[in-house]
Amino acid sequence: MPMMCVSSTGGYSKYKIIPTSPSSALTFAIEMDCTIFSIRNSQFAIRNSQFDAVINLAARAGVRPSVENPWVYFETNTTGTLNLLELCREFGVGKFVLASSSSLYGNDPALPWREDADTNRPISPYTASKKAAETLCHTYHYLHGIDVTIFRYFTVYGSAGRPDMMPFRMVQWISEGRPVTVYGDGSQSRDFTYVNDIARGTIAGLKPLGYEVINLGSDRPAALMDAIRLVEELVGRQAQLDFRPLHPADVPATWADIGQAERLLGWRPQVGFREGVAELAGWYRENRTWAKEIATG
Picture 1 (cartoon, rainbow, N blue to C red):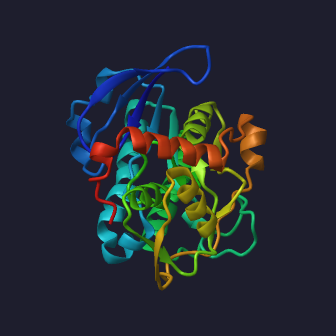
Picture 2 (picture 1 turned 90 degrees about the horizontal axis):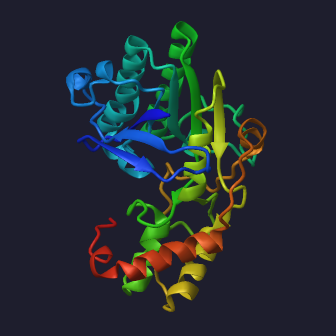
């Protein structure tokens, strides 16, 4: 199945990837700038290709930075999604997969979060930009019949993960003896989900579903302080903790109800938190000579 998998970094290339099932390999065209409408004339050249689906992973991520510069979040997350949906409409690509976020659930205390929870009260520009993207997807499904799967990812982590995410930061900071910044008292919890599980779920979402919103999470939240203690154990060093006030856009807990993913996709996470953090810590040790220099904020 030929697909376009989009990031917001620019450039273009094709890869044959190892399939997540033994059936067949998947061909991806990836990495383009989706924030400008001139992409219709870029190397991507959808008009000369036969894509069965578009997977939109392009995003400006991060809750706290979005408060400082909301414009870039809407340019990438909302306008970028609109651009890609327009290309799907124009060139007859019938399947669209959007990477959305658990941040849409905000401060909803009714845990675990189900997909039908109220997401109409975003508490950060990042969340608002993702909500707008989801709404556009429904519009294009309704008007143009595009089959849409929206995944709300829960705190994705793993080897070579985002350096602004807490798992990578914890491993780097503790390994290098740097202070570990903790916002709040560390009791807040996150539904950490290993990247391989996220990838499996995303590929499974390419099947025809009409229009569906699906949580992808571990269903096993971990407290921040417990995560820090686990990293201490795995890297063999004690953390130097630097407690800071909790940011108003942060939430005390996240927790995915993954019943919808099980029913529609037959998906469940396979990698537990200890195993996943051990993989991350092992990857960091193997790549420490350059990974220690990565800016983590």
